[in-house]
Image (cartoon, rainbow, N blue to C red; front, side):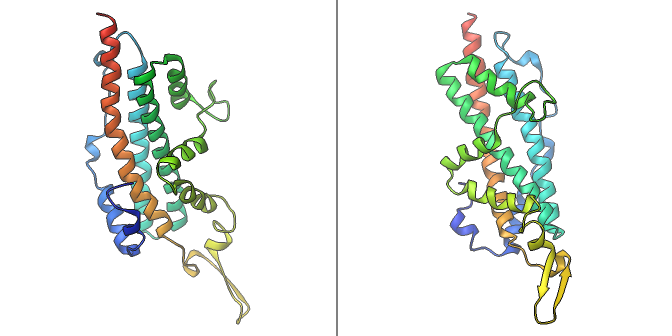
Length: 231
């Protein structure tokens, strides 16, 4: 699943998990792509460019959210950290989908189907901000769950904190002392399962990076294939 086996992660202390997350967030941010040159892609198809565009945008978003999540865990702002970790899981699921769709395309060469996926990923929305409807995030989560069993359960847990349900509201900001008949408000009165956020965050750091790097090879194969068609 990642550099760290899940059975190892669940036995680590919160402090140890946080140290791992902090170490992973200290990657070389200067290595993030600052631009891409259209001239470096084939002139016979826009698909290699579109795939690269979606890949790099996802990388910047992941980097932004994941590092912010680590900072919030350090500040003991657990619920906001959970919310960002949920977003990080979504980014990882979409990167996994992008990798698998690209790999499939390299084999099948179904231009229209792949282009539809890319266009929805780049320009899709759910509020008609754009003409295209975005790819379904739960479908992407379920897709990666088939590869890494337990992903959906982790995601669903974070969803409970993201929404003002019991876990994200009453369970996070309220405590009742039944003996004194006093209700206390504030996060300082509640102990939250921080590992439910740190563990998936650590795993996502590894998975996202792995599929981001692997995707580069698939894009090159795609680009070379279109170049050969023109010869």
